[in-house]
Amino acid sequence: MNLTRITLGVLLAAAVGFLGVRAFAADDAVPQVGQTAPGFTLPSQEGTNISLNQYRGKWVVLYFYPKDMTSGCTLEAHNFQHDIGKFEAANAVVLGVSVDSVQSHQQFCAKDGLHFKLLSDTGKNVVKEYGSLGDYMGFKIAKRNTFLINPEGKIVKEWVGVDPSHHSTEVLAAIQSMQKKNG
Image 1 (cartoon, rainbow, N blue to C red):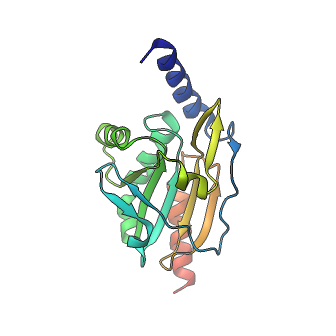
Image 2: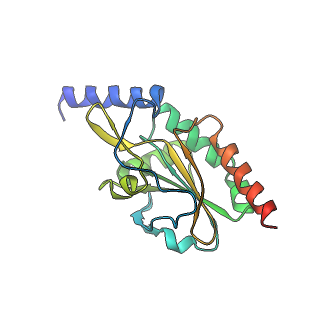
């Protein structure tokens, strides 16, 4: 790896951490609330394939994020990890998706004590299908979007361009509110 590539990587990581998704250009439309969530199978940080359909009967928090080990992405992941017991109590799973490799996810989880699934979409297919592929300075990475999928597999809420500092709390409140409504 040459110095120019390393420098570009460091600059990209810093920019993603500070700018979040506002600097990204959209590639595709975001799926709509009420639609069946597009299915997928992706490898987790453990190297096992995870499919959306294996979580039928549970709430799924499907969150897309730009880059492992950057400031905003780390903050968002820490907040989800902090609240993971509350999500589990609400019959919900948290799945994070980025275009980083399985190995990068392994390092991120080990370094930051993350125990929920991070999925690797190096082919950028799922990120694109969920309208969450962004272009930042020529790099194709995920935008910070989240989709809440109900136990029947429908998208019931979406957040586009989220603020990582309080997003976990927002998502948890949405699940709890919908559960109260549906009795």
